Image (cartoon, rainbow, N blue to C red; front, top):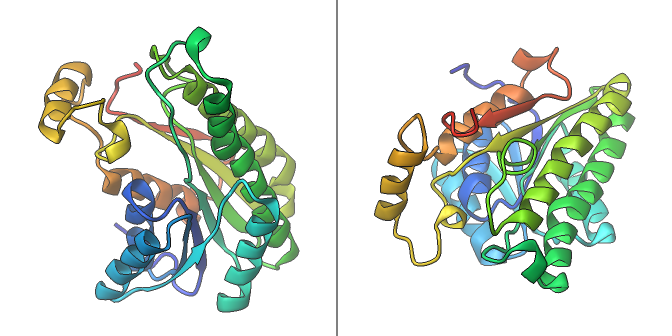
Length: 255
């Protein structure tokens, strides 16, 4: 892996209190970035910052709710005030409401999923683009979608799948509109990843491993570090000509 691709750059990561977001924070910091970790739970964010600092990196925690437009704008301003620019953003915040068919989905659950996964990503994307297009170096953005939605369907998660399919579409549209502004936008679509969100109700990590051995051509779940490495590639200068792409990271389960 190339070393220190992000030295002197600032990376903002939403949903950074655990799982993929935490792995992203550690990965960007390891390559020299000043990392702003954002989310709704301060204690979780502070744990992420502590892990980054223990590894010799630089990170700050910022409590923010992506569904709050003013809060998202303040988050971006704060990152720039602290580190001088916003060079990379990874929009990773997301929730899932699972277990019911569409006909039995509570409208409140539908709205909660859309508010965070789609509208929240839009608000973050808008604030990030406005900052990046106003600064000399532009910037890069990676949105976290899912292999569910644009690539596959599964019973009981239709609301989540719809929100993530929309993220992939939003990414392509924004990428086309803003590459001329010096803002390069792509997305990743992870499959089942070794996080708490991917566990079925009552399922253990061992149970998930057995399930994925049967369901995935790769024979296992994806790791958060593997997703992070893909995001780092898309955010780096190595991917300079990659615009509006959606990189599926699921071990072949949607082939």
